[in-house]
Length: 312
Image (cartoon, rainbow, N blue to C red):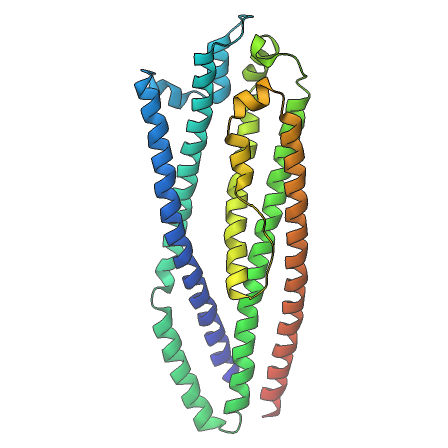
């Protein structure tokens, strides 16, 4: 009977911690979403000021826009055309970011609904358990409470560490995909990419869109991983050097076309991906070590509680 109360309280305390983390994430996402919408509005306003067909540009992929501007001509893009391509790249990224953040916010709101009154549920469960122990097992009350509280705390720590490990592994997969796309970009050669021909083929076959999509996916994964790491550092109490996590995406989307295509910095970008992957792999290894320790502690706590109850 006591195990029933312990299990119930452990579950409620996990929900309480989840509620706290989701609430903090919701507020942070609201700020991020407002900023992302502001960026998107600024880019759309710029296109309108330039008297561009905004609706048509929204529907075109980046590769499709490249091809529509270049076609089969051999001359280089004009400065105005290059600026339009840069604006299109930034607009697509801003639009994708708004969509991602809106979905994340909706998911968090859905998660929060069932745990809205978890604090009241914990108070009720505690009163019920205390009454049962007082009535049936007064000698066990003090000792058992210590074990159950520590188990609940350790289990919550392990859950957050596991979520962070999974998020980190997702980042590594995203970076691997980005690395593959960048390697393909390097294989395009070192010819003048704005001179038509090879660039036209690139755009036609969607290589540019693939690279942008891969980098955006890596950015989204990094944002989720950073959130999980903050939860771990705040609640579990371990310190992990996460470095400049979000400067990664800024590097790629700042002057993408002019820096990468004109100046040939794809090699530098690929090296940046490799360095970021090594950093994430190190962090995940640290988290896995911490998780292993928590799992072992949890197993021992459960063994002790079971033994205490059986011997009562």
